[in-house]
Length: 132
Image (spheres, rainbow, N blue to C red):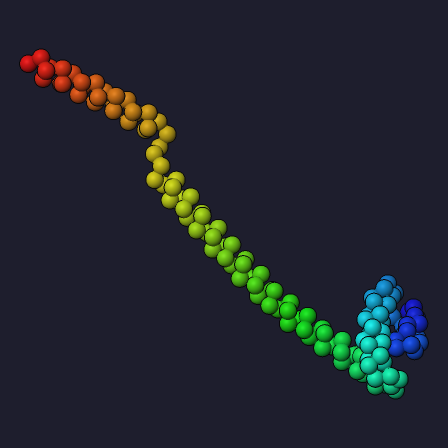
């Protein structure tokens, strides 16, 4: 189990971690150190236990805020996914309705042929009416 020396608030600590977790421990220590440095800058030198407690609480507060924002974003994302699903279903229904109302293949050509014949007959009737 690796041991690392981390610095928090100008104080060194020996901390053990799981193999391969060193980077995460260093990152967490850096975040805690930033809070500790902020606290020390505001209050001056404070006892180690109080510095660690207050720094941890400051990080917990920040984490709670991030979790709250994450929940809002997740809720918005879920609402958007539901809207996309609703719109996709509506599009599918519209496509199915359009397919159901379209004419079978070849019927359009047959209707055109009948219309041409009807026009030709109408023309013949007009011609006979004029002649008669």
